Figure 1 (cartoon, rainbow, N blue to C red):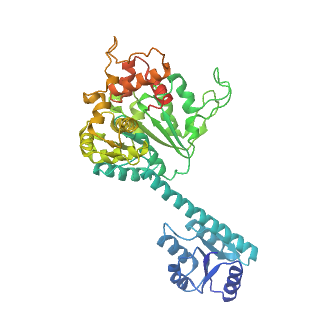
Figure 2: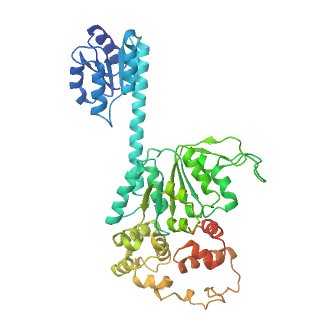
Figure 3: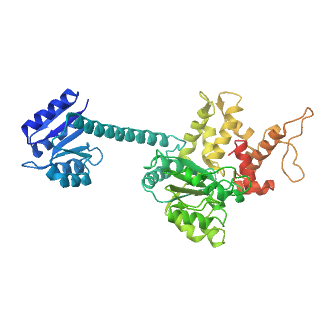
Amino acid sequence: MARILLIDDDTNLREVVTFMLLEAGHEVLPAANGQLGLELLPQKPDLVLTDIQMPVMDGMEVLRHVVEDNPDSAPPVIVLTAHGTVKQAVEAMQLGAFSYLLKPFARAELLMAVDQALHTRGLEKDNARLRHLLQEKSADSGLIHQSKIMKNLMQQVQQVAASDATVLITGESGTGKELISRSCHDLSPRFDQPFVPVNCGAIPPDLMESELFGHTKGAFTGAGKDSLGKIRQAQGGTLFLDEVAELPLALQPKLLRVLESHQVDPVGGNLPVDVDFRLVCATHQDLETEVAEGRFREDLFYRLNVLHLHLPPLRERGDDVSLLWDHFTLLHGGAGVLTTEKLHEELRVKPWRGNVRELKNINQRLVLMRQSDTLELADLHRLSPRSGKVSPAMQEPPSENGFPLRTLPPEGFSLIAMEKEIIRQALEICAGNRSKTAQFLDIPRHVLIYRLEKYDLS
């Protein structure tokens, strides 16, 4: 049942329509002219039916008041008109009316128009409710904070999300750039469309063009079927390019052309394909330096850097450290586990070169390897190599290249587990910096990133 405001100066028609609506189970608020109809708006009708030509105030003026006075919650308006005023009805729809009905109309025609309008309004309310839920989800999606600097950043995120302009997110490794990118999507008008993340550093350069732009069947060896590519997978939604500084130089002008033409050229295709997506990028590198040294195109940099969000390092978010620590303790199965104030104090002053990622990893190790349900400063010293006090398991002599490997057990070992442990230790030594870790291990960066994702170390 809906509450319907019916405005018409024709008494007979008003009574007939009122009867039809009541019979269909609706509540009716009848009014003999526009002025009287506006006085009933505070009763919050779900739908307005109004004649156009009336004394005192016509239907066009009623429509203006309904739309302008309730920009976010205006009920749909159906205008009732005779054949001679169809032009006015079309003008009314341009002003925001939902639809119009030509007099005389049948009962079925009236009820169908009413049902369509109410159904649309119901969808709009559902979308608004879903958007609110997504906003709440975004606020609790890992962006745990109470520091002033992060509160200011989240205000910027809400402002940026409302736009469709390209966003560049900068910040050190481990600060949470992907979480911010997801918030930009969840709080945007595209929230109900795909969010497609792409790690540019994890894809081999020779596969990057096909991965982004897609390809047609037979475009190259191994292309057994058509592929949309990440850009078209993000149709209507958001494409997130993480580590955008790793995008091959040869592909950068092609991405720029997509952003400017809103069309993508699949590998092996003959015709460009229209695309509609919002681009959000992230990098821990200084793109202006990359431009100056010729590794990144200047025109693409300016096209990406329309809206800029910078994530502060964790060492500048002292007020957030304890909050994050307690959140991760619960996340890692530490319900009921307490942390002493001395440990909290130590955590707040640590430099956290690996930022939130480093904090999370240390928390996971302490929670999983705890000896009691109270985490103490001694536990951090026992498990954290950087503290200068390491556990006996970490005190083996270094190998020839200086990397500390544990003594191999006589009963055998898992090569996969050892590779995972080597990468984990290398990440710690390099403070979570992927480029330095790849250099340290003497492997290409994309190979390291592949293994980080394979072993869930990312």
